[in-house]
Length: 269
Image 1: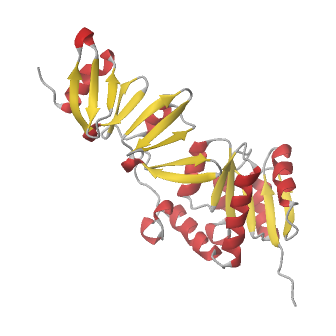
Image 2 (image 1 turned 120 degrees about the horizontal axis):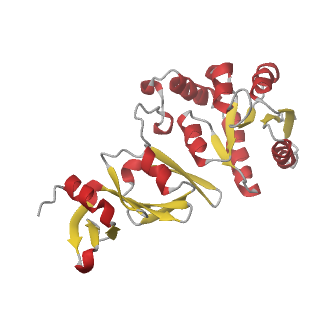
Image 3 (image 1 turned 90 degrees about the vertical axis):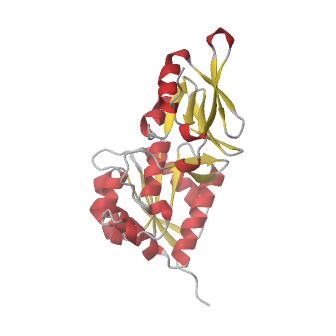
């Protein structure tokens, strides 16, 4: 009886605590071998080429070369299964756009890590690494026609087309085309898709700048709406205004944005 070869993993993070965090979680698995742990992009390129790991946990923000620079330098066709580690959801979205297997947003919990490791192991065991490499290569070459799944198709639009949402250890990619409206929730934002709500770690200001202004409009300091869903423009007493969406939802309109909204909707006195 033969023993399966251990899963060979490389850790890349410019923070020592970050490397130790991942290493401590990996050490709980006797069938995982940590082949290296490095702290910058240049060292990551060398380690991937020399050690040929099965999986790399790759920090996005590093001195010298960032995580995506590492992918480009090594070459998509030679990259192992890649899991990006980041402190920002905006980088996590880019991770999906270059077809990384998964991403971890700091600080991540043990359960989230275990799910990611399980996915990585399954890809390696089923010999699906070439498929991921093909998706990476398609994105880096800018050829959307060769990308086999919509998550990996590179966008030629300067605006967001997908938003990655993480909740309770699970990751969901929400197509922007499905979003009805967005509300501010403190420093976060709430995406409303039909009868579902998703919270993202992005401010409304940031989302406003990254959404197509032909489709979405900021109608209040706390609300962005998909214009085509506006059904009624309501003028109340005292100078207050609201819009009513086709699903019956009502959203306030600030006085400073009322005139611009009327112009966009073709409302005339």
